[in-house]
Figure 1 (tube, rainbow, N blue to C red):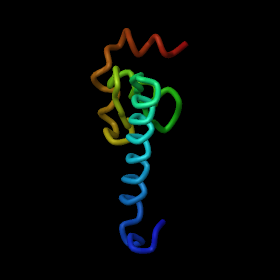
Figure 2: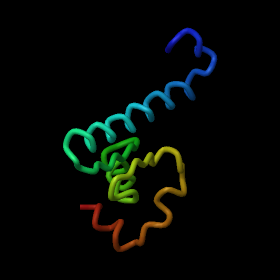
Figure 3: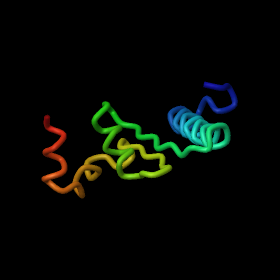
Length: 83
């Protein structure tokens, strides 16, 4: 954590990480002329679900929506992830 922002703590860290995600997407677009979708979650499954909600060319964080993140997903679709 940088000294001037030591009091901001977690909010500052989250903002810096989000900026890094946006920069990664920008560089992929600039250097490869491709879109990229980034999904962030507590585990691989939640990250995948988050990225599916923002395709194409999105950035989604399932942790932001807390409990209601999975609610709008149809039962038939979510059962496909059960294996």
